[in-house]
Image (cartoon, rainbow, N blue to C red; front, side, top):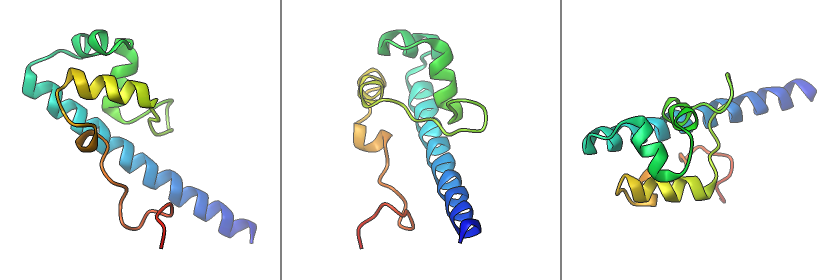
Length: 100
C-alpha cells in the first residue's frame, strides 16, 4: 500500500512539473512576441527577475514545479497582454483533480 502511495505522489509531481513547464513556455513565447526582456516583464509585474526566470523554466526550487500565486499570474497576463485562460491552460484530461 505504501509503495502505491509513493508511486501516485511521483505521478502527481511529474504531472505538475510538465504543467509548470508548459506555463513557462507560454510565458516565454508571449514575452518574445512583445520583444520584452525578462527583467522588464518582472518589473512590470511586480516580481523579481530571478522569480520570473524560474517561472519561465517551470521551477520553484530545484526539482520542484513552479507554483506561482494567483496575483502573480494575473499581473503577468496583464503585462504580456494574454488572457489568464490562455496563460493557465485547463488541466490535462488525465489529471487526478478532475471530477468524473
